[in-house]
Image (cartoon, rainbow, N blue to C red; front, side, top):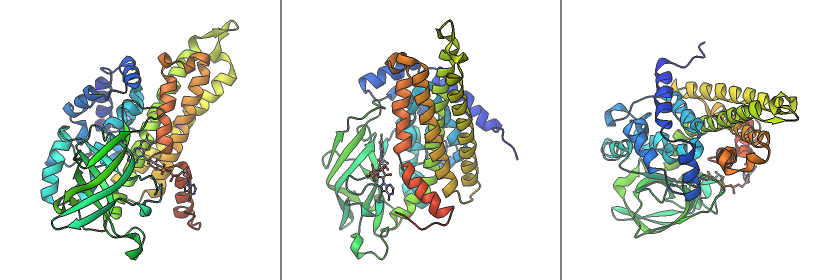
Length: 388
Ligand SMILES: Cc1cc2nc3c(=O)[nH]c(=O)nc-3n(C[C@H](O)[C@H](O)[C@H](O)COP(=O)(O)OP(=O)(O)OC[C@H]3O[C@@H](n4cnc5c(N)ncnc54)[C@H](O)[C@@H]3O)c2cc1C
């Protein structure tokens, strides 16, 4: 058993830290205030070859695993860039996984190199306003019309759609009532986000203002049959393949944010003098911070274990879910504690911890909520009856 990072993982951390130093607190504070997308940052990540870290080498990627991708996303989020940085390119890391695994050779050659070079931007269209977490109830329809499909309906929360030219889109090709099982009849497309047939409306949200989330309305969007990934009706199974890596990366990001908040809190607690002594000398300040340190350490170990299971091709559903759950709870708690450690200043934009708190809540909610994670663990790890 070895708990050390590998030399490659250490190298990833060092090199990414070097890039992140170019994007300081002022950069993220400014982008949070203006809502401007961090284009300079994503260009730097593309230039460094990081967008293809987990993509096969023959298409221009680095062919590394989810463990290395987790180190990358942890380092990015921990820099102070939090989810404003991580979400700006998160979709690139494992989003195209269904193309790699289930796409044709022609599709891989057509789509992966420009994604890896950062020339194509994609977004991810799964969530819908009426379906919620019950993905089998999605209403967006793709109706076959000769050698193309026509897509209609609405997605919600689609992040980065404002900048994207493509969407990895889940749509019903057969009505649910005509399918043997609820998740049959759903297909996966990598479609052009053609603004003549797509309307995109930004959602005003609590945090991560630099990276948009949107309502997306499809009005007979034509999608060539050649842009469907794999077989018709099997899209949900294809998507499932990438869900565990996504949970692992979201966990790594939450831990990075929590650690950054914690280190800011500890630094402030060492310096801030009240009643003639540093506030960090009080155990009611120390203990919550120490507890957060322990929680974040434990969540990181769970995350690396889930990543190791995935990379060694072992089942990792409950472990990936547990990593996401523990990391989001630990990250959220560390940010909350960082705010109270700063007293009133914790609520001020300039001290950054309120921004970290607003952003770590995304990892708590998405891509799956704590309730549904616990329901899944109860079912899969403990053999309890399915409750959803
Ligand atoms: C900032 C942000 C960015 C996002 N980006 C994207 C994106 O790029 N692409 C995309 O497709 N989606 C995206 N999402 C959507 C996100 O994945 C969903 O919001 C999330 O999966 C929850 O789904 P919902 O909002 O429909 O909640 P609902 O399904 O409406 O659930 C509401 C509440 O009820 C609870 N609940 C529901 N059913 C049960 C049950 N059976 N047992 C217990 N509790 C239950 C849920 O846990 C939740 O607390 C994003 C969300 C946010 C906030």
